[in-house]
Image 1: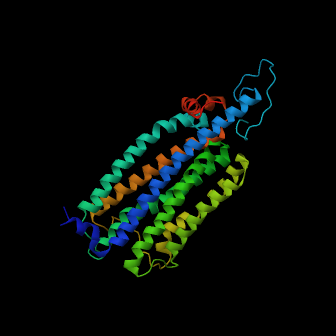
Image 2: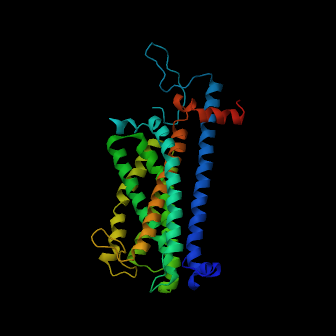
Image 3: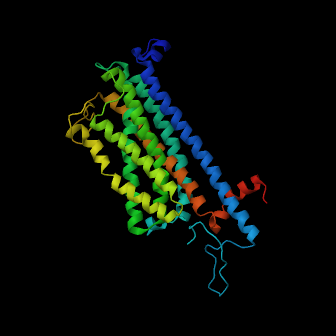
Length: 84
Length: 252
């Protein structure tokens, strides 16, 4: 071990503010990014659920990858540019 | 071909779901090892005392800030050439992490500069080009979120990513091309490293950790982006996590 005491470790030879200011802010912002990514996941799942609810109200089944070769009419509905 | 198979969001989604936990786990383990070596094993620096320990975060985030932009440019070229939908989503998923790491590079650099140079900031070629990189990331994010139509948004973003990539070699070689205050490279491809091997070990462990973290969080984020963009697709609406979430919300 290179440190004699915990106090010496935190002092960082007088550069504590700079060293821990760097490490602390980096750790905090990375943690915040993970948190925001988790929120993003929940919002994405919400968006899918809302799309499903809207389609249920329309009384339509989703159009993507459905087989329309048998001459069935392709249902018209709004996609956000994705299922093209 | 297998690669093009995974270029379809439908196939990439489960692959990303399988990959990210392992990358995150490995990133955590390497970060702990790197911090241990950097803060508990490596001695202080002869010239900089303990302040040099900032490099254990500064160098990894700076490298990764540049590499992520290269990755965004790479995906953008693929997107522009092959018109694959995954490319735009991957570029979009990488940008926030790139912006964050570019900011941390500037932040940790400033906190190192104050005790070592006597100033937080100078308009030095290395620092200025890094600031431009941060603005490129922010510009990409602002532009892509301002354009509603996903295809046009992806295309405009791809152009920014490809054009802006010239800045990356400028950052990398700035310490050679101009007489900068920023020191030259501590580690290069052509010479043996100019630092003690134990310090180098700590720095490389941290670099690998940041690399894997960036990959893990980008894969996590691209999964959310795929769900949003394909929210009308059958395969998305039949995913077990979607059905579970729907039950949780109380199906209407």
